[in-house]
View 1 (cartoon, rainbow, N blue to C red):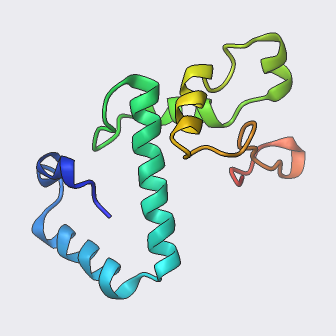
View 2 (view 1 turned 60 degrees about the vertical axis):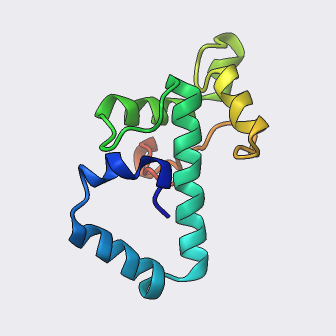
Length: 122
């Protein structure tokens, strides 16, 4: 589940107990579908980061990078018609599509709760 090529960087952050907990989750505490989804999500984040900023995903990820991810994935298609810079950049979108990691067309869309405010679900 953890990126092997970045093991040395993760070792700076994860304790031996953290690694043992993760191993336990993978081996006994996590269903196969959950593990597959988590691995897929981490792979996507790594690929997005490489395409968006040209470097591997830093751990811990800085707040600005998390906000960039949100800006690239939650955008307004109507606004993009008049502003091609709105939302995910075309080159980042294409890189993720070329790698087979992005298949959906358009943004993730949060649902709106009472009063029209986003609930955060998508």
